[in-house]
Amino acid sequence: MVISDAVGMVFIAGLIGSVAFYTYRSREYLDDMCCMMTGMVFGTATGFAVGVLYALATRDYLWATIIGSVIGVVVGLPFGRLGGTLGRLEGIMGGVMGGTMGAMIGFMMFPFDLNVFRIFFYAVMIVFMVELAYLVYKMKKKGKSCCVKAPVHQVHEEEAQMGKEEEKAKI
Image 1 (cartoon, rainbow, N blue to C red):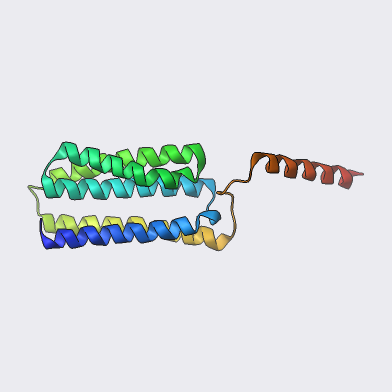
Image 2 (image 1 turned 180 degrees about the vertical axis):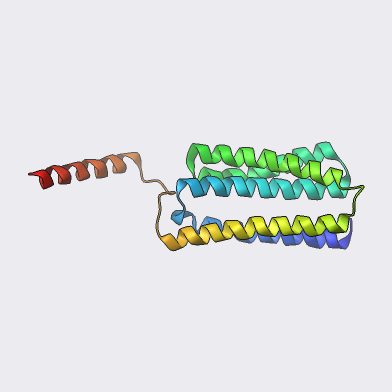
């Protein structure tokens, strides 16, 4: 492995980690759809990065697919979980999809110029994470949303209270 690959791995891990920290700290401002998207993006981006980097380092497609997919699911699932059942599913699907695509692309790049591919790969990862951080920033700027669910009985009590207020308004 070349030193630039090791530096690139550290850079990608730091980039994903810092955006993940920012997203998790801002989770109470994210709605369900945004939580689903964060699960899918983190699963896909992490699986893709690990799959590509492992395939480039070892030239082993099978293990690059397995390791990339597993790590993508492990990272995507907790962030997708914030969006409920569909969010968890998005995190799982994104992790498997990213790990598979990353391993495939990393394995197929050997006959080509790896320096050009590295620039492309780092650019894609930066765009992934910058766009996700911007999405979280915009949601945070909007104000409190509904990603952190209230207990079901509390929601029913609030709906009942609103119904009583509407009946009083009619009288």
